[in-house]
Length: 140
Image (cartoon, rainbow, N blue to C red; front, side):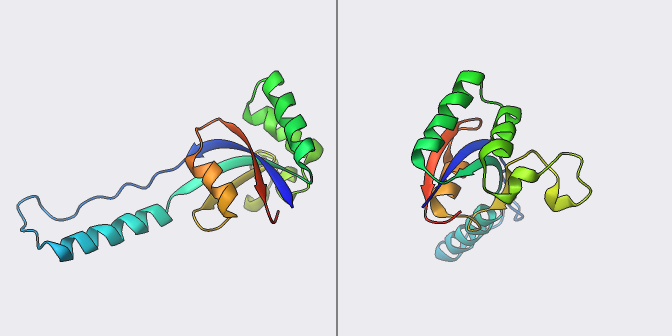
């Protein structure tokens, strides 16, 4: 069992533009079906940037959470905690890395819906921006 400490940095939203002019006739069920498919496609394209600290015990996660709240939660403080405590490879990221996959704040992940553990994804996409949450997942 792994625990993740999540700082939701930003939720990216994809806008869906209607391409039909407002005077076009609507065809009931078919239009509702098309609108539903468009909404699902837009939702699947949403991207989220979150910083996390991957640790092995709930007690350690709660201690880190408490320390970050006392210090003041910021991307820099979460990055320092990720560098010190995280077992995830994303803790080694730096803003000036030459490889794109290693560039960013320590502990930072950029992902779309369906790419991460459900609990982690829910905290990142649905939690308030800038919030700190302890999330328990089965895998890292």
